Amino acid sequence: MRKRKFGSKDGHPGYNTWLYLKQAGIDPDKDEVEIVSVESGEDASGNKYGKKKRLPQMLQDSDIDACFLSEPELGRARALGLKIIEIPYQDMIFFMTISTSMKLVREKPDLAKRVLKSVLQGIAYFKIHREDTIKILMAKHKREGDLDLASAERLYDDLASRLEPKLYPSLAAVYNVYQEALKVDEKNGDAKKIHPLALWDMHLLREIDDSGFINNLYRGQEHLLNGYGG
Image (cartoon, rainbow, N blue to C red; front, side, top):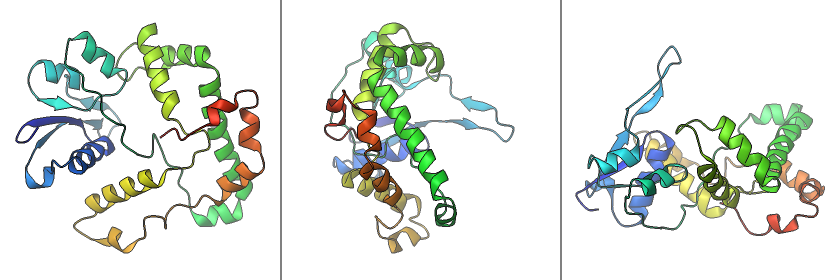
C-alpha cells in the first residue's frame, strides 16, 4: 500500500484507519500512504450529506486501491468480486463510550446505574435472541441500504462476537483510543498531560457486576460471557 490510495470513512473511523496503518508500519503522517476520505455528516440544518459512492464502489472504480470494510459492506464487496484479505480486528472501543460529569454521578448514582443497566440489558438481548435481533436489523439498519436475510445474518454474527457483555474495555483498546486523542490534539498537546486511564471511571460498572446483575442476564447462556468481545 505504500504510495497508494487507501479509502476511509471520515470522523472516528478515519482515525481508526490512520492508527491501524501506522501500527502496521505504513505511516500516513510521513506520506507513505494517502488516505482518501468518504465525506459524510450533517449540515447546519441537520440534513445528511455524503458522496454518492461507497467504499466498495470506489474500489471497483479504482478511485482507491484498498480500504477496511466490515459487514454489511464487506458482503457487498464480495458480491462485486473484489479481493478480500482477512486481517485481525483492531482493539477499539466498539460503538460508544458512556460519558457524563462526575458531579451528576455523585448526585444521582442511581440514575447513572440505570443507564448502564439498560445498555447491558440491550447487549444481552442482542446476544441471546439471535433471530429476533436479525429481524430488527433488517427493519432498522438502513445506513448501507436495505439488508437481505443473508446480509443481516452476517452483520449480526460480526457484531455479536465483538460486543463486550460486561462493557469493560481492554487495555489495548484504551491505549488505541489514547493514541487517537494524541493525534487529534497534536497541535495543543494537552492530551499528553493526561494519563490514558485518567478519564475512565468504571466503579459503577464494577458495582453492577459485583451485584450479579450481568451474570443473571445470561443465566442459562453463560457461554456468552466467556472471553472478551472487542
